[in-house]
Length: 310
Image 1 (cartoon, one colour):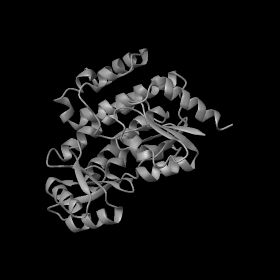
Image 2 (cartoon, helix red, strand yellow):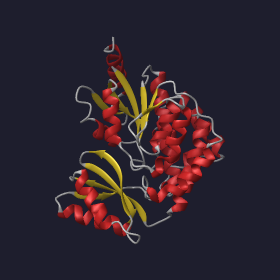
Image 3 (cartoon, one colour):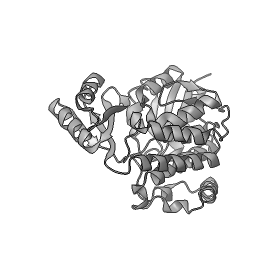
């Protein structure tokens, strides 16, 4: 049986989240490296004011995911697979060995700026709960227009879907969802991710990433956009560059992981959103978040999971 490390997208970030990183020499080394690469104090990225900016949020999530993973690995908790949702895919790319951390920092800084500049205000994401995909697709079709753009952005589970669009479109979607017995919640994301509205910035990021070296990963890299395992560096580059404009298929990815003998899903901080989405898939396994589970418990479960393969 195998272990997967998962990494969340935007939404669960919180003020001073980098102050909650593990007390470990890895933490200080990576923080120093990040500050040097970005030419700024990265510990200033998680203030209340800074986290209003997409670039700061994405960098915080990358740094947190990589550090927590490397500390776990130092304790003998090794992943057989990595997978991230949206920006989380970059931490997955670093941890599996496909992408160098220093390159990831520069890319993510650019990614956040391109996304923020494309839609500085009036757009975002809204989670729709309690409705099935065909119902949400019908809502999107009813609302989507040049004046009120709306797209199905994330298929996180059978009844946890996310739409992207402008404020008016998302408000209309919540109203229609409520009328059908569902509901909607505006997410802490200020850009309309995972739809064609971000095609242009995704193409710009693709061009910039052509100069970045990608390697064959040391463990499996699972795409949160396609649900497929990727081993070629060029394919992982494309997956990361374009994922801002591609629909998220998290449920499909976790089903794929389970079919490949993943029986322990460990979500790196912050939050436990992916754990809640993944648990229904792990019918004969475990899904947990580092934010809510003691390290010794994770070590014990990882050892038991790996021993079960023999």
